[in-house]
Length: 375
Ligand code: 3YP
Ligand code: ZN
Image (cartoon, rainbow, N blue to C red; front, top):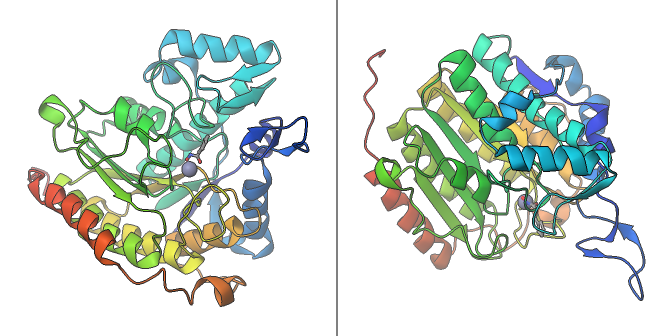
């Protein structure tokens, strides 16, 4: 059993993405519904964490808003100020036309970045062994000068800069298993040799023009960005292979003091936006490997920050499974979708998945082994 920190705040559910029909605006023949990025999957994950009783074994970490100065370590003042003023004026889009937000979302976005900061603080101070920040809106697409893909501010990047400033942390590794490319985190740290960014995602899903194996970091940060773009259809075998053959060796060589995971559940078998078939047991196995890896390289210091995942009915089981892995506590909740999702021919590793994983694995091997002076 570990002391696992947990961040959730009612206001995360109040971020208003408006009336849509999933991905597209409603109107005409398109009956109004919700945006795919609605509160549902997250509030229902928060719900099962309570109802399963797992909440009683977690260390509740209060969410707090990030300060303007925390945001400005990552984003331009123009982006920050625009989100603040558009939010106050009733809402708008964060930058790419895919990132709607309503009145008050500026404050909620600060609370999402601040929730990730609070989780990092808890782990680096020793108040918790590891932590899960169930935040909203997400962050991994946001770049310095604008929001993208449902993201307003880059929650994880902001928390990394906080950790450097307030905890004297030097090297941080980011592992992103959200089905979309973590382009924002990649871009923000592209020329930073002290932040290793690894993204496993569906090839050319979103953004369509990034996430290729050839994007490796620039200057003296060459080698510190690794992409594993898997063709649509990947299941547990491909994801676990990517963790074992790319993520683990890269992190062993990089020797970070902290691992942060961009935890999206849109690679699940039930997701309306992703075309992968990862199951709750697959997410749990990934999380178990990440916990073991953190034990090996950084005293177990692992923080997860929630990203995408749009199946209201399946995300709760995937998220609960990950929290079980972090805490080492079994709730006894059985994945009711296993009967349909586990017994699928998508799970064994295929030759084409093996090929891209081998390419990324070769890059992980090229990472220069860091020898720590503190033993
Ligand atoms: C944002 C607009 C189209 C697809 C999209 C994906 C957002 C997401 O879940 N990113 O991780
Ligand atoms: Zn996503």
